[in-house]
Length: 142
Image 1 (cartoon, rainbow, N blue to C red):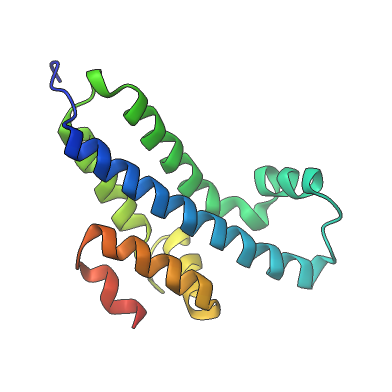
Image 2: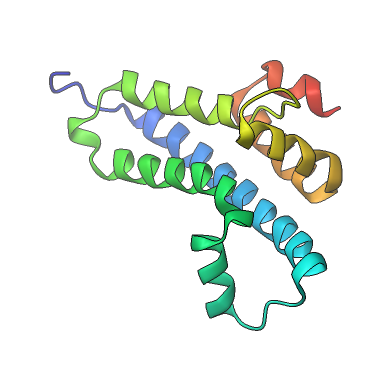
C-alpha cells in the first residue's frame, strides 16, 4: 500500500459517514429493542440490554454495522498508514450495507423491514444518503 496518507478531506468524509452510521445504528437498535420487548417483555436494565445486543440472535444482524463503525474508527486513528483506496472501499461498504433490499443479504433485508416500519429509521437513512450523495440508495426509500 505504501505510505499514502489519508487526505484531510477523506478523514472529514470518514468522520461524517461515521457520525451518520452511528445515528442509523442507534435508531435501528431502538427499533429492534421495541420489537424485542413486544415479543419477550420489557428489558429490565441497561446491562441486560447490552448483553442482548452483544449476544442475542435478535440483534445479531446489527453487528455488521457496529463492526464497520469500528473499522472506520481504526482507519481514522491509523491515518498515516492508510491509503485513500482503503477509505473509499470502506465508504462503499457502508453504502452497500445500508441499501435496503427485500432480496439482498440478511442485513439489507432487515434494514428494508426497519425502513418500512420506522419513520425514525427513514430519517436516519436519509441523513446517511445525503452524505454519500445521490445513489441508488435514495430511490428505494421514497
